[in-house]
Length: 79
Image 1: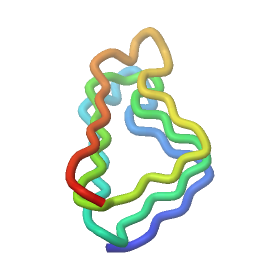
Image 2 (image 1 turned 120 degrees about the vertical axis):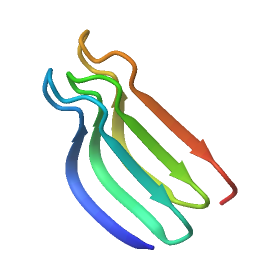
Image 3 (image 1 turned 180 degrees about the horizontal axis):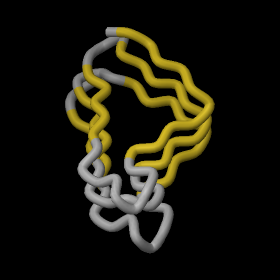
């Protein structure tokens, strides 16, 4: 468990940035972010929130540019 705090975060920022992952898993695991981009320009990135993990985002994008195809977000487990 742990806590991460950031103003903004990118998974897959540039065109060549593909296959990035972020995992928030377990009770007490928290990511507080003002703005989250899962695939700003890159593709095939994955955000997973599982088993009681918490994502607290002011706003978020799943695929921002036309080039950011195939990005995914998964939520599973209880919590």
